[in-house]
Image 1: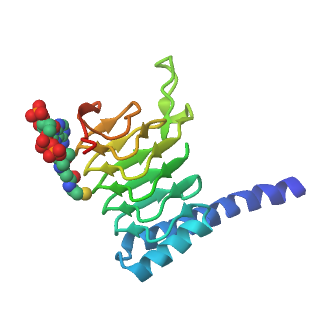
Image 2 (image 1 turned 90 degrees about the horizontal axis):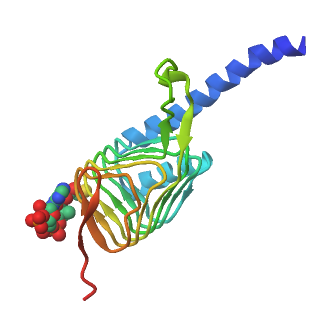
Length: 185
Ligand SMILES: CC(C)(COP(=O)(O)OP(=O)(O)OC[C@H]1O[C@@H](n2cnc3c(N)ncnc32)[C@H](O)[C@@H]1OP(=O)(O)O)[C@@H](O)C(=O)NCCC(=O)NCCS
């Protein structure tokens, strides 16, 4: 009897949880960015387990799947169209700028050794992404799982980060490589 009730209730709770997350995501994606509306977005994210600093600016079209395992520091900006997956954990430092349509992807599908095993059912691989203070990720970049971007660095538009990027450099390309150091003058 208990098993039957569990079998009925479990999918129902999962359904409610999914709706709960997606209604929050829909609000974050459609509300304009203003100081007041950003407070509402922050409240939605914090209620779902994220840690969000002060004056974080979130533009419309941002999609976060889902806000658990995510820290965003004070004065960070998420531009229109940014996508973040948080399965592996995502840390975004203070004053970080994330440019239009950039993807921060902390989870991959596992690619099985054997081609007979479908990727679809092979599970995931996770890795924490850390973007330190004062970084600028330009438009249309991809940050892959397990990578970090050091303090004050810039990832030029279209860059795909597959390895750690040190602090105070300009990096870009696919895969992203150091283009030059930033002057310390
Ligand atoms: C990063 C960026 C600002 C350039 O900074 P910069 O310090 O002025 O760099 P430069 O233009 O002097 O270029 C330095 C080198 O990087 C290369 N480079 C510039 N942008 C690049 C890019 N997106 N990908 C790969 N290489 C790039 C240049 O060709 C140049 O190479 P070279 O030394 O062999 O000639 C710029 O390239 C960029 O990505 N702009 C997009 C900004 C954006 O996304 N705006 C939206 C706001 S969210």
